[in-house]
Amino acid sequence: MNSRFIVRKVIVQIAFACSVAIQANAAEVNVAVAANFAAPMQQIAAAFTQDTGHAVVLSFAATGSLYAQIVNGAPYQMLLSADRKTPARLEEEGLGLGGTRFTYAVGKLALWSKQPGLVDQEGEVLRTGHFEKIALANPALAPYGAAAVETLTNLELLEQLQPKFVQGESIAQAFQFVATGNAPLGFVALSQIYENGQLTEGSAWIVPASLHAPIKQDAVILANGKDNPAATSFAAFLQSETAIRIICSFGYVCQQQ
Amino acid sequence: MTIDSPALQAILLTIELAGLTTVLLLILATPLAWWLAHTESRWRTVLGAVVALPLVLPPTVLGFYLLVALGPHGPLGQLTQAMGLGLLTFTFSGLLLGSLIYSLPFAVQPLQHAFEAIGTRPMEVAATLRARPLNAFLTVALPMARPGFITAAILTFAHTVGEFGVVLMIGGNIPGKTRVISTQIYGHVEAMEYAQAHWLAGGMVVFSFVVLTGLGLLNRRHRRVLM
Image (cartoon, rainbow over all chains, first blue to last red; front, side, top):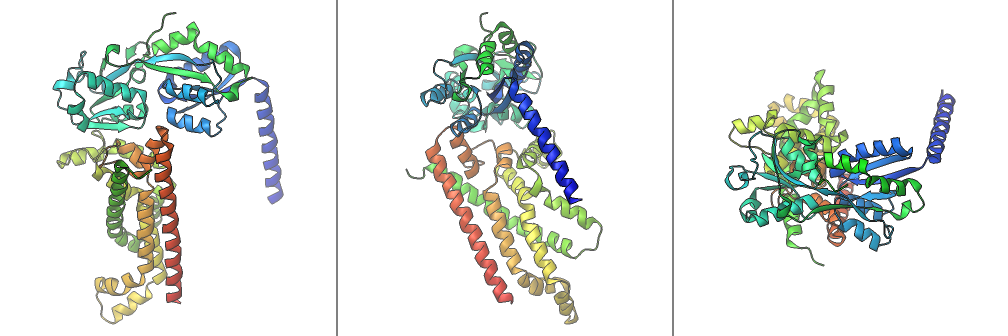
């Protein structure tokens, strides 16, 4: 009984070792991705693998978490950050490869409610609406949260609305608060409520770009990915027409092609 | 580097949350643990498993279900709204409710073990001396189960202090209301403010160590007393 169990265990281990060896032959890139970019990233990765045969392994988390992991030796070859600051900092610290930084997406901020008709096209609801809570991402952590605060500051509504803030630790959580109805409305990334060029549900106001600094999201190849052909190739693919079309369809600013 | 006021606020709030949770849970868990320790019912196993669920479930699962259940479309949310309490998400009461569920096994299980260790004999003796059941429970069983109560109180308090996933999911990070130490640490780490994170995180390590050592010492003393 016991020995049979051991034999089985050894066979499993050999099988596992073989599968690892096979994977090692094909080029593979481990990409750490900011949570707000999860949906487009999956489509882009699939298209990339189809095009080049390289495999992409994706890890999604908040940018701050990813940074802490990278500093402490996480095996990522590339980072797609939710901001510009983190890739720049990694490059300064020698953990990002110099000259590999680029903006892969520019985010759009939206005021969203699950309730149809609650949010009007001009965002007047912020002034006139009788709501008890408004969700946003923590402005100290998430660029979309900072953009939301900047927007409210420019509308001169920050002081009035601040007591109603409920903050998610990331834009994903701010979305969750609104999606579950716990907050009647909130600032989310347009990419979270947008697919194939239209709103998936509820009502939204797409905040004009003039009300906040552009939410530029930068990518960088990490020191780990130095001699990895898949990493270089993926960086190029992210700037290709195919990728830009996908990114645009998910509610990011559509860049010139 | 000193402890700044947001940190102090988070620490005080955490102590308030853990203290209230401990008091309420000891009250709620005592009859439950007594029943579990003595019943012959076939529901015992089922209820025991339900009580133990928070031990094995990831806190994010609890937090997510609480967020949905307490929300305007969830059963608990509709109940609290009908009662005129509004929604409990993003409130201290909501966190308290979450903590009661999250720390339930840490209160029930030590008490249940203590009651089981006492057995039925002392209560039977008390009954032959014409003590009423409630009277016998208060004067015989409770004092004998004292080590169990101390263990339950310390574990519940410490476990609630360490609560993170549930608070993160239903808290909304409101200073003075729902921002506790663990979420404050998370915020510092995310914002790359490692110095502040170290202060609070280091404090938590020391606190946990002291609590567990104290618990060990207490248990040793009680064992000696009982022998």
